[in-house]
Amino acid sequence: MIMDSNTLYDVIIVGGGIMGSTTAYYLTQKDPQLNVAVIERDLTYARASTTLSMVNARIQYTLKQNVQISQFAFDVLEHFEDRMTVNDIRPSIGYHREGNLFLYEDGDVASAKAALAMQQALGCQVTWWSPEEIKAHYPLYAPEALGLVGGTFGAQDGHFDAYAVLMGYKANARAQGAVYIEDDVTALVIDNHRIGGVKTKSGATYSSAVVINCAGAWCTELARTAGVELPVNPVKRQCFCVDPAVKSDRPLPLTILPSGFYFRTETGGMVLMGKSLPEDVIGFDFTWDQNRFMDHLWPELAEFVPAFEQLKLIRGWAGLYAVNTLDGNAILGEWPEIKGFYLANGFSGHGLQQGPAVGRYMSELITGATPTLDLSIFHPQRILDGKPIAEGGLLTKEVQYNVR
Ligand SMILES: Cc1cc2nc3c(=O)[nH]c(=O)nc-3n(C[C@H](O)[C@H](O)[C@H](O)COP(=O)(O)OP(=O)(O)OC[C@H]3O[C@@H](n4cnc5c(N)ncnc54)[C@H](O)[C@@H]3O)c2cc1C
Image 1 (cartoon, protein in one colour):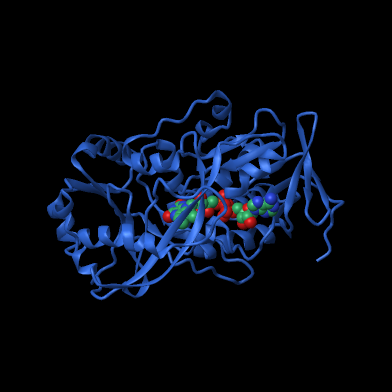
Image 2: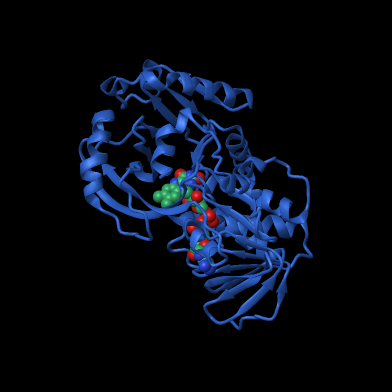
């Protein structure tokens, strides 16, 4: 393909993963006249976090805005196949709402119940289960073995096919006029505190008064070319897929132990799992290590689900979280010191489900529309001010591991 490097775009999006593609979709839906280019260095998405994710969507957050973001995602995913059919191609996204079960020790109950009350007040289907109720729903589980005092079950939480959703947004964005360019952005062009476009590895310069950083775990490198230092680290996270000798007779929800270890069933009775550890490597490392499964994950799984003691490790993979070291939350909006330079970064391991709401919000910010959902709490000004968003309780361990 011949690059048209002389074109002046209304908006350039760097990175065509879920954030770049949802933003391109909602922008071109809102204003079909907008000239939008998405510049993506690898259109196979082999290392994009979007395609290496565990693809869980959950309502169980302690920050109201994160709950509302997921409520929109639930609506989008529920209707995705009907609404995103384009050129006679109907996406098939395998949306399974099998629930999320967060488990608690005694000391975590008060904060979990406070979060539960907030979620219920927002209309979410989340309930408190005693250890007996947990066992009645999932007889293979042994909450007594870990001294657990209960759990919160989000019945509408679930998982889906991330690649299919990404391709659905991309196909629709392109049908609405967005252009995808395969190239590597090497520098942002800045003139007098205003963005002017981007330079790429192929030697092209693309001009635009609006550039959006949707570069995922690579966002800090990109921002640095404009002299902007983001508190976002690429952190390696590993997942494993096993085939247990004893199969569960029902789908198991994404089950999260107090240690942060999580697992759920996949097709064919397989079990997927992972756990963030404090020693997880910071950097662009995609190797996976089966010793992590042997040393950390298997013993914990077998203790909580004794029936899974015998199993075969089938495969594993590693991907990158874009960890916001300030507060583990998204960074959304225009960078205060550079006009026209927007950020959609720092999703810290829960960004896939946030793609729809973030893409819609970015499109509203850029077109000057009133946001359907006010996400101004995530504005990048808080980085300059050094003021983290306080999210506590429910996700304390996850956030602790992420924010470093
Ligand atoms: C193991 C793992 C499990 C996860 N589990 C979940 C989960 O269960 N639920 C959930 O919601 N989220 C989960 N996440 C997080 C989620 O995957 C991410 O938050 C989300 O996909 C981020 O999307 P993105 O578009 O910002 O980044 P990406 O999908 O990484 O896309 C960024 C794109 O930018 C491109 N790019 C970067 N720099 C440049 C450049 N200079 N020029 C051109 N292109 C560039 C990259 O090639 C990439 O394709 C998980 C992540 C991992 C790694």
